[in-house]
Amino acid sequence: MPEAEVIYDQYKDLVFGYLIRLCRNRDLAEDLTQETFYAAIRQWDTFRKDSDTGTWLCSIARNQYYLLLRKADKQRKLLEKQQAEAAEDDFTEKLMDRITAFDAYKILHRLKEPYREILTMRLFSELGYREIGELFERSEDWARVMCFRAKRMIVEQMKEETKNE
Image 1 (tube, rainbow, N blue to C red):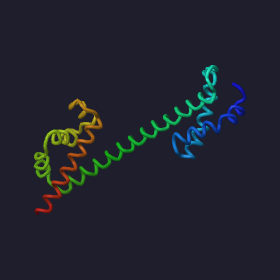
Image 2 (image 1 turned 90 degrees about the vertical axis):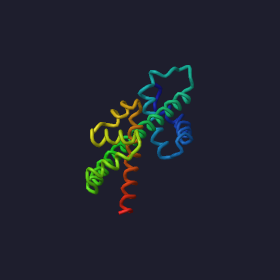
Image 3 (image 1 turned 45 degrees about the vertical axis):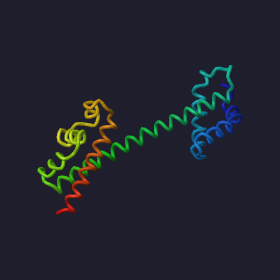
Image 4 (image 1 turned 30 degrees about the vertical axis):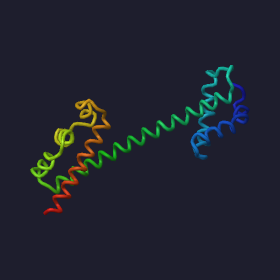
């Protein structure tokens, strides 16, 4: 590889400017510029000399940015899943504290399908969202959303019954 410092000095402004336009965040663009040049040093032997070095570096920068977005999305989904599971446990405890098992079945029985079946599978059969999704030939996310909606319906019915008492 030609002197890394020379390549960096020659193309840092190009790569940084490209990343600023791409991510619209100065601090992030600075970090990604460093990551780009680090990746370029590691990949220098794969660089085809028939293309422009600046173009090659910008493509690495773009890939670094997209990699960061994918990682952030995975972390966000994991956090949402953990929060949803914690909320579900809390919901179940609060529900069982407030009503008897018979009352719970009465409210559950009034739910429309597939909400009733999904919530029954989740709370009483302790099936995971993936298994529920498979049974309905849908995605795990679909099962999670439907279960959340069913719980929200139950809470609304509980509030309604509390008002009427």
